[in-house]
Image 1 (tube, rainbow, N blue to C red):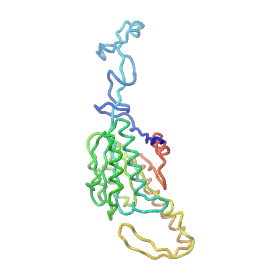
Image 2: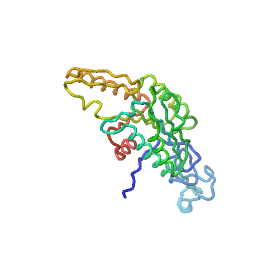
Image 3: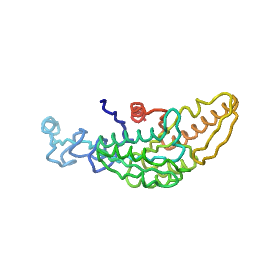
Image 4: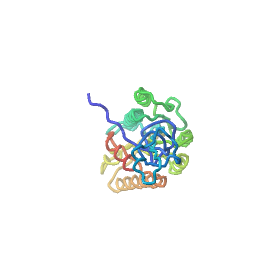
Length: 282
């Protein structure tokens, strides 16, 4: 059996924290990655005296080795549980979300960080809330809760409430949604998460735009309101449909870029290696 691949991530810049971990820290101390040598009086730690460096120093200073400490960080996943994520085309969107969050929880725990889950629709979904933890069983619990949850919300108003729940020192926050929500709501949520490392993940299905016919009657259903509408599809309408979809995606991207991060788009299938590349290159 092939071992599942981890999602590799890192915070932007150095972090502060008392828990030892895998990420570069602002702290300087006795353990971690070698940083430099300084005179003993600048860092009076007799355990870290560099004997060879001291003997070679032309000014006869007693030199001490300093190390850049490494710390852990909390990683949160804010997950949209509205009805639009129950869409099933080339894949079930909710299955993609569950698989992604399971892989993310596993990767976070393996890295020595803590993982937390907050599900939302019109408010916080208590059945999909997991507090920060480093339990090895978190992967299975996260995925099971999301697969068993009812994706029945009619709006995503709980996003701002979920964002405000992520309080305290800096964290990495994944916001996972199809982002079919008002841009002013998205902007408010980004402002609430302003002190954290925001990573937006757009769950997409290529059949929503690519599988449209040139001609024919189509019955369209709004998954969140349940309203149906009959549309006569034709090339001009198909073109406008795609233009509006592209314009909306551009608006989402512009909003997110104002807060320093372009969205990661997952379409049809989960590609862990591609996600890792995007996270490490950002």
